[in-house]
Length: 215
Image 1: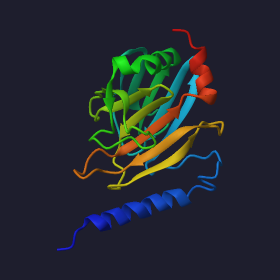
Image 2 (image 1 turned 90 degrees about the vertical axis):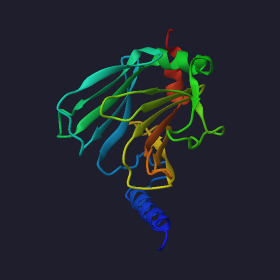
Image 3 (image 1 turned 180 degrees about the horizontal axis):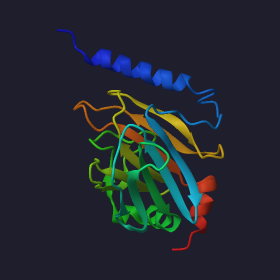
Image 4 (image 1 turned 60 degrees about the vertical axis):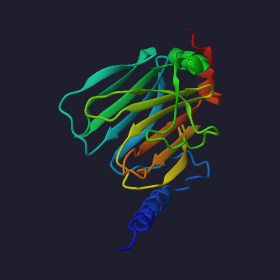
């Protein structure tokens, strides 16, 4: 019997290629983010001294929502619930800039070093890990946050339809300014732990907001 793994990897590679080709000028500094099938977002905005990340999962339906505080970040929270403008589910993260600043400065002492869920190294990070914390959300796998000096990250578990492939793209704010990387994480060898990882560079425009926050 032939090993099905190469076929799965080829199918995953073709999916990623189609995603990349769907972007006009992707990878050329166009300011456009990759479009993930079945997902609206992720998008990032800065409002009322908070960095807000939100995603709408178009095929996921929930009748009840809830809000959860992020450990070690007393002014920051996760919210999951029905999206008002579609039949999907809205997933949002509101991170207080002061919380990001405090955890980024002290995360080595407060948080455990974490890789991607399942043990694979973080893409784009030399050491392959950052201090992080996992948050349990009902009817969802753990959401993982990373705080590492000049980097903030969030991993959201999502079925990506790809295996053994990690693809990384530039990530832009709504104004077209590059603020980090977005990585699509395929399933690992156990057939689990797929999703997407957003890493925000806490320098430049984002760094100015973080630096000006009062703790």
